[in-house]
Every structure is written in structure tokens, then in C-alpha cells.
Length: 116
Length: 110
Image 1: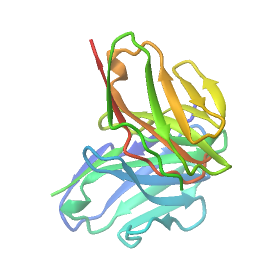
Image 2: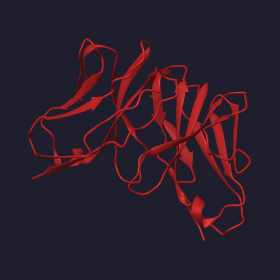
Image 3: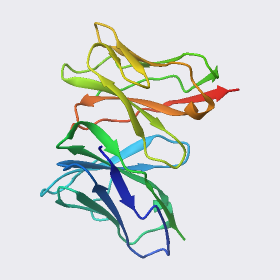
Image 4: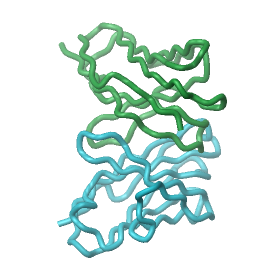
């Protein structure tokens, strides 16, 4: 139980385009989802917290207009990187909590984004 | 949010028991301690969670002293496949926000 998926697992895009990453809780209802970013050889950095049906709460220094987060249902949250630039290249990981998995955060497999 | 401090790296050999300690001096009353394992290019995997004393599951044990200012993850009889980065997180259960520390890179040698 407590499985979280992400799609796509990797994506390459041109600078200036937008990329959408999906995060799904497959066997529980996720009332809360978190989005993290991880650069090589570094720890995970929390970008934002989203609760189903509410606007996301962004961490200091994270541009909410650049990283659009939507948590429209209890099983799906999306992160859209708008007007992507090479410095946005990173490993993006989501986690989910809630329902039968309310005890802790369960993480997705991550999405590798490369912006050319 | 409680700040956590772990050793940057540890080496061990196959079959040995490994103990990784995390310091969290400003842990709050309602904070839980959760440990995750991460392999390269993968999301963290939940290992164990506890509040106080000792918790054991099929893969690890977690020891938390009475003052809760530190915790120790114990991995019995490690194998090469346990080579990974281990993170301890301190925060409210489940939906509570947690901050990742730098993690401990465990290298298991044959």
C-alpha cells in the first residue's frame, strides 16, 4: 500500500517551454501533497505544500508564478514549470500523505527534467 | 521546524550492524522522527517512524532516548544493496511539513 507515482519519469524540453509533471496517489486519498526539488549530490528541498482544493503554500524563494501547483483531486497533484530555463533542470519529487497513509509522507519515484 | 544533524558519511562491511545517529535538539512536543532511504535518481523510501523509546519493523530499529533530542537508526546485517543515503526527518506526523537535512551516505563494502 501507499504507492505514489509520477509522470513522466524524465523529460527534456527547450528553454522557454512549459512542462507539466503529474503526481498520483494510487491506493490512498492524499489530502496533502508536497513537491521537492533535488540537485545532484544535494538533499531534497521543499518547494511547496498543497492541500486538496486549496491553493498551494510555497516556500520562501520559490516563485509561485513559475512553479504552478494544482491539487484538484485527492489522488492527483500537478507541478507545471512555466517558461523553463536551463537552471530549472533538476530532479523533482512529490510526496503524499492522507487517508490510509496519513502517518507519514510517501514519495514518488521522481521526475528528471533537463532544459536545453 | 527542527534542524537535524547527521554524519555526512559512514562505511561498513556486509553482515555488520550499522547505527546512524541523528541530532535534533529543538524537536517539538508533537514532532515525530521518520527515517528514509534514497538511492540515486529515486524518490526516498520510508524506513521507520517513531515518537519515543524503541520501534522495530522488518528492516530496521529506531531508538529514541527519553529527551528525544537524538535518534538512532539501526540496520541489522547490512548488505551491498543497503548502500544509499539515509535521511532523518523531524516534524508533525503525515501532513506536517518536514525539512530534509543533509543525510548520511552509507557505503557497504564486501
